[in-house]
Image (cartoon, rainbow, N blue to C red; front, side, top):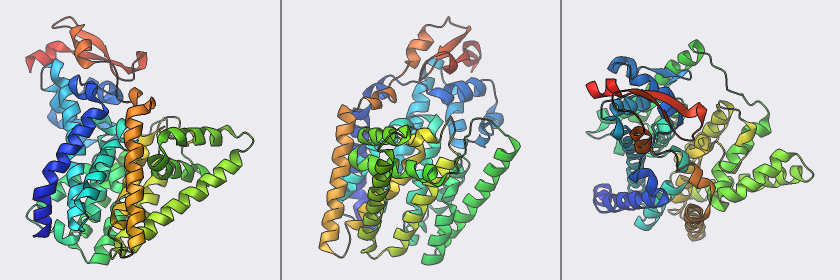
Length: 426
């Protein structure tokens, strides 16, 4: 009954706070929606000429993005002028649903409402969210966080009348890129430790989805992935972007990353100091949460944090991995790890030791303050929340004729042809 009470009182207010902060972060994005990169060139450009089944099963860059396909397909079914509204708001709805899962997580573990509100606001403002919110292109990264939160929930919360719908969501996320599938071992660990049938079932579902994605990767070879094998290259981006960026800002971390990448005098010292400080913060967050009574959950969060960060770095697409040694470069790969860090601190506020609780609250407040300051002051965020207006692009087209439109980030590479006549028939 306590969970139901907390949800009734907290969820609406927390969701309202999430919506307000998200709007303040990028008002233009929601008032004048736009298409983003592959969302337009690779998805909308192809799906506008496909039927329902072909659209939902479209394979792009060696993996299936089911929810991205579905969102873009729906966007092709409305008048062209409204297509970007569909992709923007449906994609943002996934982030809002994930905010609700954060509230459910807090209620399930008896977290104070003030901490819960802070966690939801931080979720809206984490550095990687500028790249992944309100864009169908990057829905897979938000989906993976929803899967993480489901993994973190107690078994009795999953065993409700909504359990079948939960499995449907897990299937949809597992078929929306690889990141959600990587969490499968965490569900098996939770299932064994907690003797939880739902966790074990979800682990099996995600494993099957992982096999499907693996088959697609093998059967659809592509260029553009620079696999990282050097230990430091595999580990450093995760340390910078999931540990330091949320605490000291992506701006400062970008300067640290630039120094490390330069290889100049003093780079080794900076690298060593960064590793030591980052690992110390990870150990601190784990220790704070460990002093609560949910130790198996803490172990799973730390394990998934490391697993996702390393595997996402290894499989990064587009001229990486050295460019990921950054404050915000390729930040989407580290959204999952940032939320693991946040959840550990949230659990730390329920520690048995008073000092541990105070340190956890202090770090959450620091993360929140840095996030707000970043929203207000950081120039790099503008480039990820602004782009060619979809409405202005459509207005420049001659009615009932095909024409070329431009999407973020602009330039000849990010243009594609739209078929107004086909859209008019629908």
